[in-house]
Amino acid sequence: MKSILEGFLSTPPLWKNQQFGLQQFVFPDMDLASVDSFELPTNLRLGHQMEYVFKHLISESQEYDVVLSNLLIEEGKARVGELDFILKDLKTKKYLHVELAYKFYIINPEISEPIYRLMGPNKRDMFHTKLDKLKEKQLPLLHHHSLIPYWEAHDINPVEIEQQCCFKAQLFEPFYGQTSIRPLNSDCISGKWIRFDDFNSKDFKEARYYIPRKLEWVLTPHSNVIWMNHFETLMEVNLRMVKENAPMLWMKRPSGEIEKLFVVWW
Image (cartoon, helix red, strand yellow):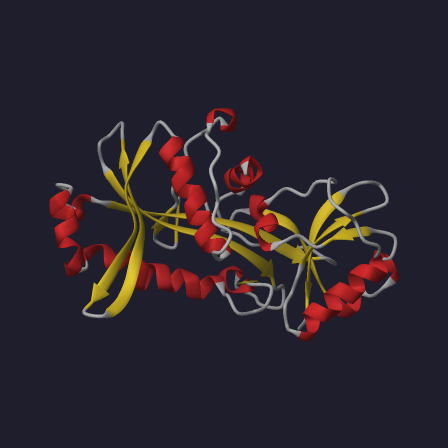
């Protein structure tokens, strides 16, 4: 499980400092050799698994305590939402409300504005809608009236809690060409994306491929997997295209270089 922790830590923030009125959380420097291993639940979506990873790493750090996590907010029998993390800075004694996001976005060069260019590989997850949700729904929940008992129990004044986002992302640019994503962090570019018809071409026939499980998307690609040839991969990818499901591939070139590649169905 150390490889998942390393993958999470090495994924850059989507922006640095403050952008869009949101302050980026700066993850503390950590030596993974001194971090205890842990069991990651396998029956959860990747986003929830990353919450477990974040909580474990922060708990192992020397800079923060996790005061509250996944704090459900309800009105009667209706769930309004939840707060991801309330942290205590052990040096300043201040409290932070941190909302976590770990995303995989392709960069669509056909759209002019950078924040609208980022979308999930299946076009169902848009960065700009996530941004709006963070600002208009998730962060304001800190001041929901139902949380008063929690603040009283922990002797916390919610007005003094600073709000930040830990927004990590892997971005994928078009295979043929590059795009600008300023003011976003270009260090997040982790690979390429291509349409299925282009993948079914001679440019890709000489490479070998591996289709990682969703949790493995977080990892840096390595060679210790069972590789398939282009034809075998094409058959597997085609099955996913029918279901409108864009898979990630690890592509190993004849030179031995390995890179990440999304094949999209649309």
